[in-house]
Image (cartoon, rainbow, N blue to C red; front, side, top):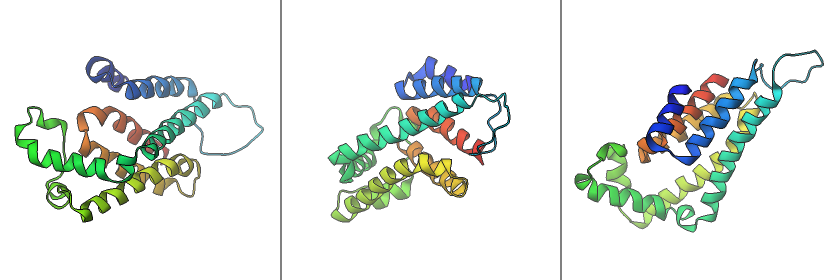
Length: 184
């Protein structure tokens, strides 16, 4: 976590990743024993459950705010934002100086890199799926029965995000994915 925080403060200074790093790092440092899931017991404990609660609230807030921003964006919901992004990238990637900032797979560029009605429908469906996953993830992470499936969905979603903007999202996606894998 300290390496991720150092990278964020020294390199990109992405506000959401810096806030997430600082808040989750603080919660984890204060948390003590992270426990074994949701359980109520009346025995004394030295675990700082308030820090654990804050960690859950921070993660929930990030996902729900992200979903809310996407819901409010007609261009994102319509699929047009992602379709235009991939289309533009496919046509100008040879002219980009910092090509390493993107890692869009060639099959995605080839099959979804145009602005046809079919491709925009596919991007619309993917946009709706992303919004639904971001809303469902916080709930799924709290339920032991759905935890493995939720972790798999979250890791897949963050892997896809890394293809769009790996340099900007590597720390945030890395921190979130690591915290998911810690839960399993």
